[in-house]
Image (tube, rainbow, N blue to C red):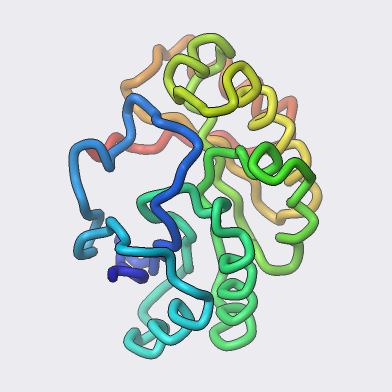
Length: 200
């Protein structure tokens, strides 16, 4: 199973294929790998010990950052994520980022952000669209009608706990006016706004 893979100068961690969303633009609908990875569809979810063992195969001096982002929502495997992040911090002292849809608190029915404190340096949350109805149509969530508000609430919880909080949209998928509305949302929350390139 491909648990760790390189994208640019970062090492990505593939913990799960589960996700409570079925986003219309999700890359896993059209491919089975990213960057220099092999097939990212997992036969089963790995234990923390299995993921930790994989790090021995990599020269960690080559990588700027360890990123929890695979072919699923990494927060779905929160317990494993926390154990692996603690190992990375203690062993390699590398910055840690989570790329997430922001549904963590919906998934667990509690505020999970405090559990990330001291382990995670950056949370990158998919904002996708400034309009709630459009957002809900795009992400096709299991939590119908709740996802947009929960994502913004999650971002607000992260600010002040996680050193860097970034909300993202994908270039060319929304208008310049909508991007400015997204920027205003981020300013209000106290998060950074990033327009990330389309990697279709």
